[in-house]
Length: 594
Image (tube, rainbow, N blue to C red; front, side, top):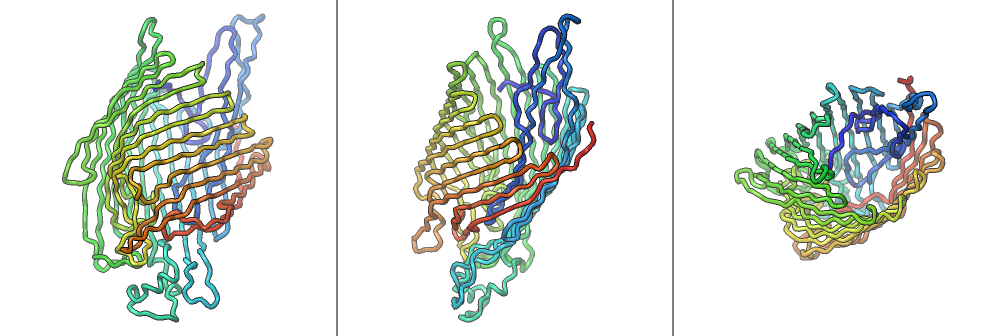
């Protein structure tokens, strides 16, 4: 990777170019194409808890050089007039199942030195799954409330010191709430004597349940500080320090300290120094303080029949040293290095050492229309409490923590048929140790709470993707993957998946999006000791969205998910809503030109 650095500021905390150019002689400056701002509303499936995110593109602009060679020897560039920046937006929406959403974004306008802003978001649903049936006391199709709520706020800023160093920081808070709703009336009735000490054929206990009896709640506070060298010197550096604290309803908490830094040196090789190279030294440290402090007689999620949890505390570390060097030799790119890993994440009282490859060789053909890459990499990923609860929001308190070690060998091909049409094909062989999987926790009689399951296996993955882009008007992608596992009993691992996405922009007034997804059937959790393992059927889905831009300040949108009206299962005993709608508007407060 050859590094190019620039001072950058724009409408968001992400970087965009803001450079000044001095030109002498006959010259036609040109800024490459960028996509324009296009923020589409996002809603998550009502049966899952997802991370907050938003995306946008940047407005296309082309500068034209205006000069008079008969008057002056050097051409004089006249830039375009300063345009108004839209440095904020407010998005409000509401959907079925009582699903409100709100977003507010603010970013400072043009400045060569400072950039700051804020982003606040909320997304929730307060519906139910299934209906009571007349004459049926305990319907198996009634799952009741499947509430979830996600709220987050972020403050961010960047500051340039003397055109040489960039300082950045952000402070964020997240609140995630959901329910362990994976049990129906029939299951609840079967175990009511275990749960409530009585058994009745006439009383439905779900009506007397409170959501506090089977809820999950997580709060996360994080602060990040970074420094980055912006000079054009051969020697450069960057460093980031992140501190986060996660605390949950059932008295579990996790403090994470992370340092990520690198030194890099750029140099030229060969005759006339025509070949570019860069040497990197990358250092990562992750420290975790995991704590469980249950109070006497504290409640657990509904259906827990195991032993009372005990107080636990452990400090875990994961330390990576990754030196590597890259050579760009014409159409060849050579990347060579390794990762040395020292960790006591799996067991806090035992330290282990791991060594992973970090090599890649790539070659371009036919004026870069074809590129082939062959590589081998590896590493260890920490399955912390924060990671586990995002992968599966229905995991129970006091989950076992492990690190996933993996070796990945791959062959990739990219073909550029034209500027508009591209194809990617790839094949991988992966070796996993302690890979994160899930199974139902037998300590919960309602079979609605999961626990981590760490498995060793190998996998072969083959897939590809076609992409067609016609400027900003039409964007189509389709692709898929096939998976082969050496362990045929893996839960929640599909044999294949496929997707099609399309986006259409009509005169920057009407924006339409369509997405179709198919995921093969998977083995679910083994719910009991009978040896019968549930199979979750093939999942297919279709979603669409439409936005009408009334003017630069006001637009309206509508989005629908699961248009196939399928009651699919992401996890055993957790059915989804059949269809969800969200409609709303986006409003921008116009500001003065700066």
